[in-house]
Amino acid sequence: MLLIFSLLRINNNMIFEHWIYSTAIAIIFGMIYYKLTKRDYPWIIIASAYAPDIDFIASTLLKGAGMNVLINGNPIRHGDCHNIAFLLLYAIFVALLLDTIGIKFRDSFIFASVGFCAHLFEDALVFNPAYPLLWPLSTQEFGIGIIDYAPDLYGIADSRVLITGIIAVILCAIIRTAYEGNGWLTRMFGCRSSQQA
Ligand SMILES: [Zn+2]
Image 1: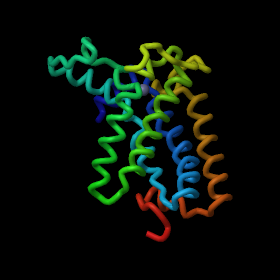
Image 2: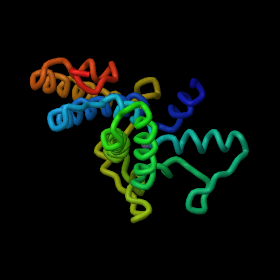
Image 3: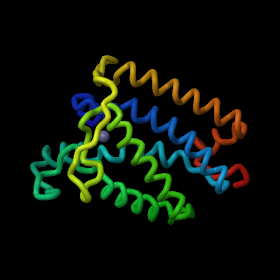
Image 4: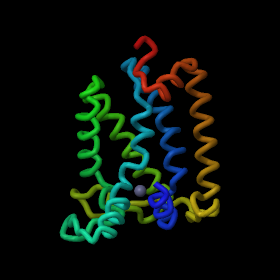
């Protein structure tokens, strides 16, 4: 764990920022989904906050083990899983897995996709160019890069990005509590789909 943490730190991977921004997105998306279906799995979005970065961990571990796994003819590297192809694979995998504990395939597929997309969006927001998000349909690299990312907070977070994210979480929490009370907190941390469950 410590090894992964220090590797992510070297690679400017927005460790805390992904977690914080994905939490804000989980609160608001969960609110809308719950309104429509009376089901809510925001924890799947938060659990997916780092999913695309599996490419970085895999490439580092494989390199360390002296193994080579090729993607598109090249050794796997950071960014290879940041696209819609891996989004689909990941969401199907999570949906099949959670189906075994009684969560509807469609529900977990949607929440896992949103969690994966949230990470891609957060990367694109900060980095420009970020990654070829539409691969295999297109190899064009997308990015917005609204800030010049600098992990000034002990090398593990950019304080401006982090503070903006924390404010976003607080605002989303206030909006949701004002709209539907605080039952969502139980579903978020208690892994339950509805208040009636
Ligand atoms: Zn990433």
